[in-house]
Image (cartoon, rainbow, N blue to C red; front, side, top):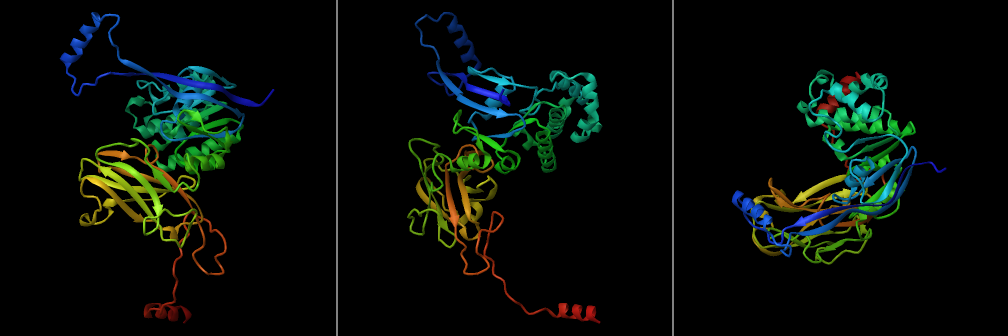
Length: 438
């Protein structure tokens, strides 16, 4: 018998979306009452609201062995949370099947599996019962759970009064300490502070070393790379590739639908259409706006160009980009509004082309990703990196120095060429040296 603990075969999840044929701009209580009344007398041939099938998952198959730590990665809306809900038996699949060998503990969103009216103490025992554990088994782990969650003072307080951070700390502590064969953790850990996230990642490593299986969903590719041995990449509800080595899966994710040389993004159709800003083209080019060949050399003069349309100008508009390393680490972000307001390049409606210099000289050899960021300051995102944004990728090579001591890629994400020089020692330091020597 094979050593799988999770087996997914041709899994699919379908939702029915309901659309009104004619959308009213303003709906009053009177409109609702009249519409309900009309339905009572609607003839069989009357036009009904349009329904559409939406497949959140389609034809997904994979097999996970006992003791593996697997990352589930993909953009927002790719189907990650839907997959985890099916594996956790919160929702049923529309087609295909899932086979599990062992108890499953899930932490999918704040409050999952907790009763808000019960205290923290009562919810610990409730979750243990759901996992099929006896009261004695839960009691043996109780002190360890409470110490990990750091909620001793609020243990007998109803969890509805907990902050989101306290909720997550206790929920994760329960899920990780009650010895499930399969631990499923969604992006919910991002609610906690940095110290708790570090502690939680360490606990998941301990769980996996104990022979238990962990499924981990996160947009933090660095954490996925550190934690997981394999990863499944989802795109639009489908597995983009079979379960792969985590480094390969992350590379495929950061490359998007193109290759590592996808240094140009062109809007085909009405993507990201918005009267306040519609991106038309994003590319890396030289000073004459000619697209650069790939990979880029560190000493090259390269610019990030963004072309767009504005029909209705809003003074709160800011446009820019975020730069990510290959493992998903955000290196920096830059916006048109970073400079003095008099120098903002976009001030009116119409077609425009803007650019910002790409600081290649500080980057190390490797692959990088740019995602356009645009929105109305403090109000609304129009292009949001990590979820909904034009994206392009590029590679960087070269040392940009003739030094015989810089002959290979240096550790770290950045590799700036910094100047060093000898300076005259201040009198204060010379006096200090004289005192020490005497």
